[in-house]
Image (cartoon, rainbow, N blue to C red; front, side, top):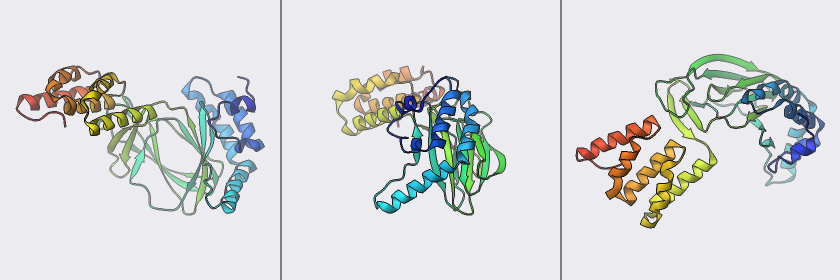
Length: 290
């Protein structure tokens, strides 16, 4: 693939211009764009480009520019998203001393962390059964993967939905985090002590907007919104379909049985199970969707 920095700039979402004034970042971009293709696994080919960038003078120059701008302007917000395009993004992370987090999370994209300054201990975890990623199961615990030390220039690979990590530092540290395009739409959260799954989240922005729309309809309680809510019963995200069903339970409770008949044949096992449970409650004289 043949790319220029100028063609890359056309893909940026308003970010990256400052970093690309530094030659190491321009070289990094050209190497990355030459390696990436339509396969998610091509992301790992960028490891050495990220490693070289983390060890370059350009990385420190970028950080120095951010600090100086902060001193010159009291309301300055540092650019922690260094580069951002449709193919990948590069983030700047500051890691401060503190207690290890009780919750660790999987990611929806492949990630690579590269140390720029300082050292960090990384407690690694792995999800041995990542699929299906959209079905929550408390039995799908993560397993400990040991502790590794990250020093300047070291790169740590984290596979989407598989690898989790918890960082700890004795002194502050700075690192780059490179992220691929999203591979999944669901993110798992785990207890770092018991290793048990805690929550399953959907992180797609469009799905979040759909949930907000349904929440607004629920709070307004207007019957005129019912046709709009019904349209979400066919949404690809099973969380949205289920939330739409609960909205309809309040907007048109007299038709709830018909909606449940559809939900018990839903393509997602947890929607089917929840709908069946509510149908049984209704048949036994209980209340509708909760």
